[in-house]
Image 1 (cartoon, rainbow over the protein chains, first blue to last red):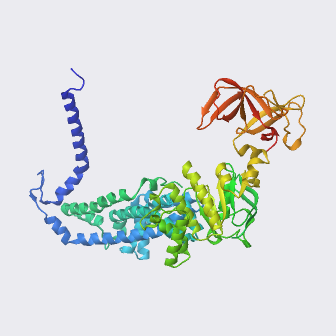
Image 2: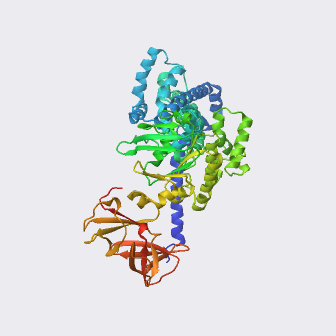
Image 3: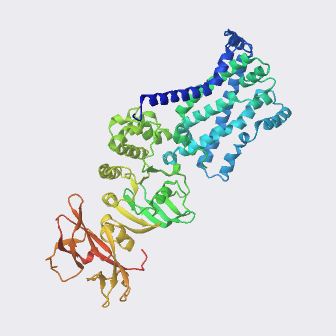
Length: 273
Length: 360
């Protein structure tokens, strides 16, 4: 009998198909339950699938608070992204081009908000923000998100600026351009893909941000993640599912855009001081 | 065009001295080539002239103006870089026009000036089409764009940092002639840095030889090539070979048992028998003769008996390798000698001898 008979080939193929099926199940399984829940108008235990299917909860969601939360979340994300870029880009340029003492320390400093467990940090901030009277307001949520998201933009932009050849700026200086002029004419245009990529990172972070928004923003500022949490606390599984599906859409869209903008060469010196 | 003067420029990095008191004057309208091995300080000198690096001490004058502390934007020195440094996100036209835009020159004047310069550097008009970007051009064309960009602002000084090193040999030899031509036509004072000797000698009005942060010798191409004044110059210029020899009992310099006659030891130090010396000659001066050769003049220089065996064909010539003891002598000839005894003759004025302990 030869080594690779039809029989053993068949076994291998079946094995591979089973592997793919298992992978799909693990990846899509949790998502599939969300989809089912969002379309379930009536689903009582112990049925395997909903007794009645329908889009009632989708309609209910859109008519209700969901749209407001979505819009609030978008507004906050846009503001946060704008503020972070305006703050991080010049700072990143300075860090990338000049010999700053303790540069490594400064970069690590921005890592802190992500390094510590968020709940105690935000709970403490909550009391502080109450004193400053920005708790429960959009400004408070923006402030807390900017603090945490700066690192995404800063580290990316430092790497991007370091990959822009210094000689291109030297050429501009020898032509008579001031440092600022050269920054806007040469450095920034060449860094735009990096700015866009880090902007996307920050935008997604802000849209999905939960703990800070919940603690600082409540009870007046509600974004989609907060809405989803509140709905699931109230056992409105259908609303929660609809909400979480909506939240995942920007993420998927942007990640597709993101991998188009962020080239390997920009990230090659990510984190290198 | 003004005279460019450097007085005692010193530049130190943490442990090394890149420039050790360099004094040099560039006469207006001339092409000065700074030649030297890697690390000799020539690129540092260029960056200090451009204003991209501050000198630790010393002074710099463009004509009567003291530019030592001026920023690059204020000096009026334009740079051409080894890797072109063209801005990839701007069109070719915008690259060239940049300096003029900064000066707020009116649009129609910019267009005519850019046209003029583009013709001057030998680029076709299509290159100025608004959608053409530098990355679409060949290396030689990109370097012409870089040259155009530098010249369009009529600088007082044109600085070129090994501009042809990234190009292939044919393009290099064509473009260097062109650059020299443009420099003469425009009448601009230029400083050109290179490690390629042929390039340096073929385009320079003045050659400045540098090593380890110091200027070793200045002169015309012929002066430097034919009369190197130091051991370093003798070794660096041309296709030199350095051989070891000794002083024999009767005071003569000896290479592997062969006497060298009529060549004094450099700097006239009294040589004692047994001293080691270094013999520097160019293998283009080593002539291969048939074994029956007898020199016409009384014996001066060096005559070696050898066996021609190892050789390579380098295109139009054969390069022979001869071994004397542990040492190797190379020689070129258009004749092919196969497995036969030959004589190698070197004229005495092609030989330079230095005592071994002498520093270069």
